Length: 220
Image (cartoon, rainbow, N blue to C red; front, side, top):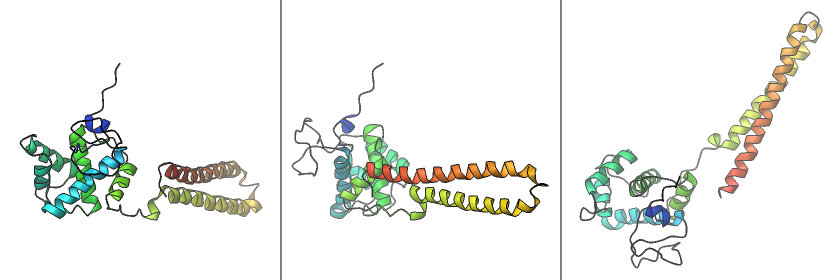
């Protein structure tokens, strides 16, 4: 069974399929093996170039709607521009004539992802790659709320479980005077204690794994 060959834009690390010009883009591959399209060192640089082009469309040419942007990006002389506009609108969730701001992270990211998907028939890049590319293009992703990070969620689980262990111990201590009459409950309290201990260890493990994973992805 043979694997399907990746789309040209994916192979070139140029998912926007920017044609070769004299523009000295950051991150160009030392050897340009494609005679028509740029080849970048990594997908991040190719995505950055795509995003910078969209920003330039707005700043230099005043193009702010999907219809205007794609009309220039994929002119009818070479493309099915109408189908392209419809696809980007559907994928991004924005109407074809809604005024967008390419200096807003949520607008730029949505159009960038939609163009990548249409150009290549897929969008294979991770959220970390997209965010890094947009950051290099000058658009900073919104800061994640600390309450929603994996590290904090793991810490909460460990804290809740630890509190639960303390509460169980208090219950057992309180039951001590009546232990003979309530002996049937003791095994269940012991089981609950071990379950909460397991949750504590899992929570701590999530915190440690999240930090290792973030470091591996280049996130801090």
